Image 1 (cartoon, one colour):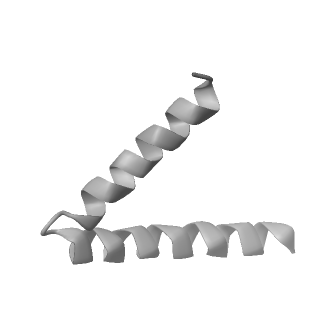
Image 2 (image 1 turned 180 degrees about the vertical axis):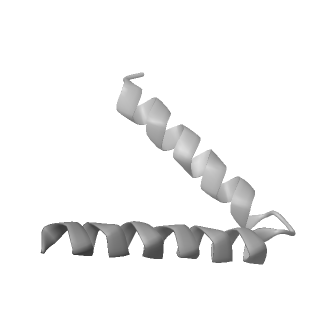
Image 3 (image 1 turned 60 degrees about the vertical axis):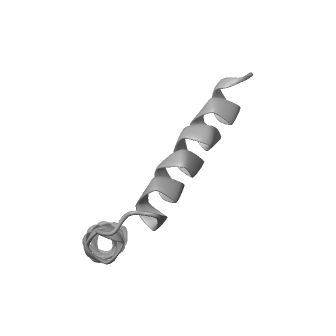
Amino acid sequence: MNKYFIKGLLTGTFIGFILTSPKRDLWLQQLQCKLKRIARKAITNQK
């Protein structure tokens, strides 16, 4: 039981929880917005 296994297990459980949740669509939209914002920041920082 190393920390990577535990981390993976937690992540998998979290993703499974989101996918089975009735609020999935809302959460996925919010997640996409966050990822886009992070990506945009990363791109602007590279210039």
